[in-house]
Length: 88
Image 1 (cartoon, rainbow, N blue to C red):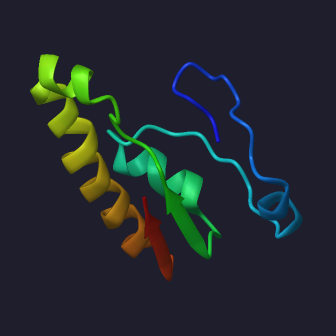
Image 2 (cartoon, rainbow, N blue to C red):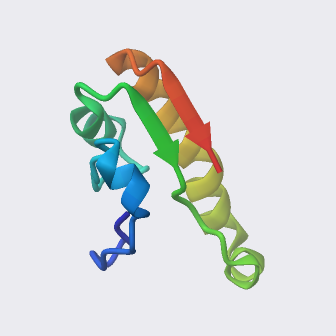
């Protein structure tokens, strides 16, 4: 997993053993998401604003990333034939 600033977060070893690949992209761009999803069988969607205080301070940003970003990801997944999406 990669944060927006490029810092790699630990990926559980069992996911790496199962062939999970890390892909970085912007939820704001369907085209970028489509490029990153090419060939993907499934997506584990963990991106978005998870900080409640930040969301309260900047609700428009939180809505843009969490709502529209997820909609963009869903659109890209459909376009690329991704069969499974796990949203957490």
